[in-house]
Length: 119
Image (cartoon, rainbow, N blue to C red; front, side, top):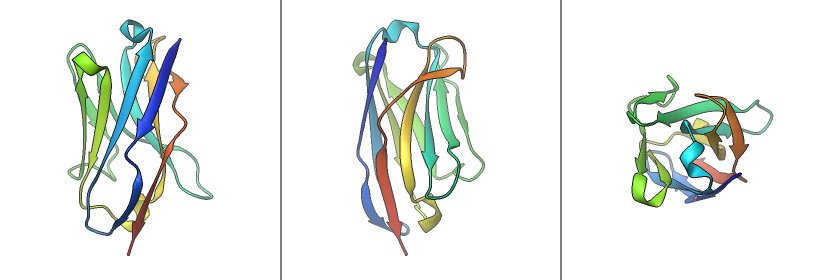
């Protein structure tokens, strides 16, 4: 079992920044990678970014490339999503996810944290 706890969401003006955190606990040694997804009202959940280990390679959705950065602090089993130059279309509930059965086979999810970007 892996438990995920997100934090850091909130309300920000367009052009601003936020940093989301996802703290993992439990059988974290079994994780292949962790990722961030988001779901806007009336839309399906979509991929945002992921970080794999042990090489810490990262991948991003085209819509956030150059604006968002995913990173990990090994010692804390925490993954961050630094979001800069936020746009109103980034407004969504952001979810942290972990894959333990294989790369990008996400089987654990956090509760989500709301990010609202005002214009």
